Length: 339
Image 1 (tube, one colour):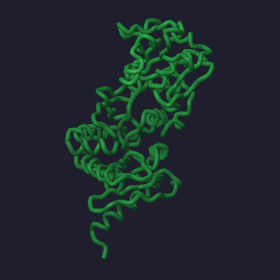
Image 2 (image 1 turned 30 degrees about the horizontal axis):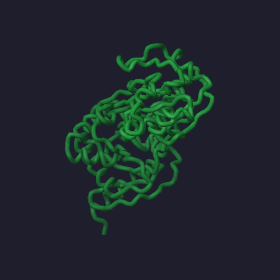
Image 3 (image 1 turned 180 degrees about the horizontal axis):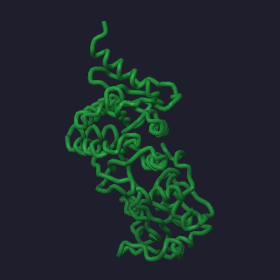
Image 4 (image 1 turned 60 degrees about the vertical axis):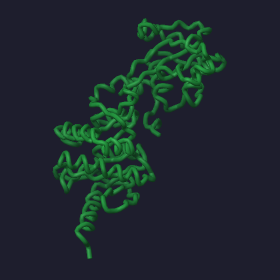
């Protein structure tokens, strides 16, 4: 005999299948342990004309991508979806994509409405006109962080960053032209501060480097610049030179490794986004619900478990303009940078 509870699950599953979801689905319910099952690739965009957020056309909340979500993530997802549903009155169902690439595809097809994206993921989705930003993750008190281009004092590059006033002292082209045909040290091929954004800045200034070396992490870039035996200059976050291990090994690192140019705080952390397919009036309602969620101990814990968020701040899409411009200027395929 089919109980009312079982019938409810069947209806939700049938509703989701009608959306043609393109990623492994988690149906999160309070009385069962869900098991992800892969679905076939969708053949068409969802055709539902019912009002978004209703029982027949629920909002789809995508949790952090994972091919094998843990029980703790599933439970935390329950907490988030239940709270957002209770605060907004919108019907919410929860899914877990296998990867961020799959998630981006689902946003494009209307198979996800609310989620968190990495900086590169957001840049891609925003430029596709798929999402609008709701909240930014705060890390160490900041929603954005910066980068710097560094060189060994003995290289005789002219520093155009004044560490007393914390300002660059000339125009971009004049400062960076001295790196034409020089060798760069980068941290890794996906790092915003240690590669992508500095590369975009150099290309924006018309600078062509001679060659490059990837050293896996940013302290290693500082070490290489200090040793002056691998590259002519490097790039790191602000300020990688102050790492305790570096200062212990190289007491004069702050003097010997100089900042030539500093990129201001334009590099974001992850954010919470909403699909542009949803009516704009839903933006403030959903945004407010997440803000209130973060004010509860259970909600804050759930957000940390699912998305890694400890604090958030209201954000507008315009705040990401400089980051997106420099990421594009790098000439790299942003989709290939998603981990």
